[in-house]
Image 1 (cartoon, rainbow, N blue to C red):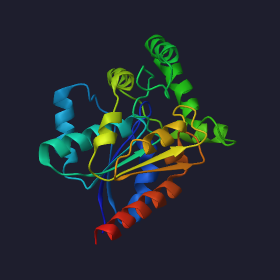
Image 2 (cartoon, one colour):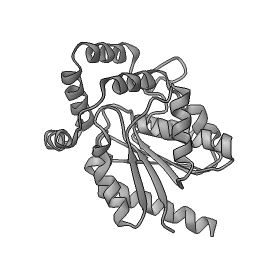
Image 3 (cartoon, helix red, strand yellow):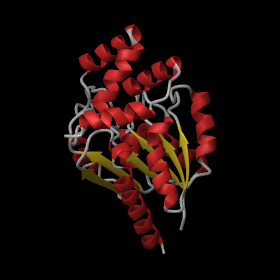
Length: 243
């Protein structure tokens, strides 16, 4: 069965970074709509996105987009009693570390990054783009690829996105979500520790599955064909289980 997939990009680069993955999934026959990050801390904005997302079968996201996807799936379950398939890619439930969640960017590093963005957004975005690619032998080439796809971003939206990265913690949503969920991580990810994959397994959620692959934080872009295949295999598997 072909699925309607909502795909949410990560912070900093715009929706075009996931265009290769969108195209790969569409070649498999799925309908894929690609959207940028949004300010989930604004309740009105969040509810507008919930109304859009409820018409999809699968809600997926990369990095911050994965946290946003979890929020949407949770809201749809609460408001409409529908359990969408939730898929996250290189997404830490809590990006900035706190007392409850230590496997994340430590607070001094995050605050330094946030201050750097306030002072010089352009160079900070470039630095962040390099961190997305960091960790593999192809880092330099991947960075050039990423730079070619990055779109100019609204600075206010990016500031709101940083606030989301600082404040959001979707761990409890993933622990308690009754729908199917699939979370893919990368071993060489410079921004999200591969330890997070094991932590999610410990949640004990009945329909939660994880996978750890080789690659950097940017694997949804640089390995779009592989990730498309992984997602399609997962969707086919759950379809067979439901038959």
